Length: 100
Length: 233
Image 1 (spheres, each protein chain N blue to C red):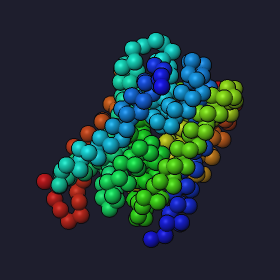
Image 2 (cartoon, one colour):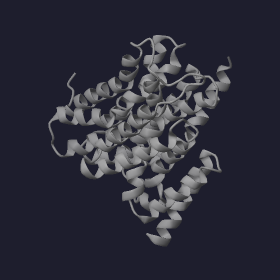
Image 3 (cartoon, helix red, strand yellow):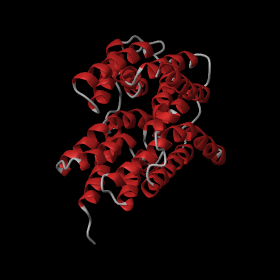
């Protein structure tokens, strides 16, 4: 069976990705106790990582997208996730039509 | 123990993420074929790497005729945040068998991690049935989207016209806001936002994700958290 270069790159990339998905657990599970500061750091991971997937897009895409993010952030204080998602979708369409 | 209810809840939890990711799954398939991937190679990539942003980077670099090891390293760099995910959510999988854990980690994409953390935070158990129901649902649709995009080309002609190109940031923002009752949330989010924006300008993508995340996590470590009834130090 002959594999293409693409296939080899994909399989190596898959292995690299799987290593990232088990790596943190492999390291952490070696420790019996976790220092409170490490605990605090780990508890911050969801907000810390997910914020980086939003912030540059919010700032650099355009004024309509910046406005959308502000609206969604405010709406999230009062509404559940799915509602915020729908409002955000509507907002990005509306702001793009209004302010580009 | 109610596996059927867990399975239904697990599928329900990933539905918004599926909707947000669908345009990108299709777009990935179309772009991969544009970059000389066969349909088979495109589907293989979605099925084995299963990480949207890194797949986009991979096909992009392949088009530029870059050394294979550098492409693999870039995929690793884009996915480096998963190291943090497995460290965090692994703590909730102690009751699972080792095999269950190592199967589950394969499906640890951004929404799967965030929804799992939400599940734990709400006080409901993180069962293998709940986790895999959501994980397999998202995984299957992701592969089908890549295949559809590769087979039928750019079905979404101009994603911006429908606003679908901005759905993922909106979805992720909703998740960030959902964690706002956690200790140190505001300083963490502020540090990650500032860190990722500066890194985006100075270093560039995809490094802004790891650098920004480390800023936020470092702030949390410095502030620390007072466990109930215990001094921090």
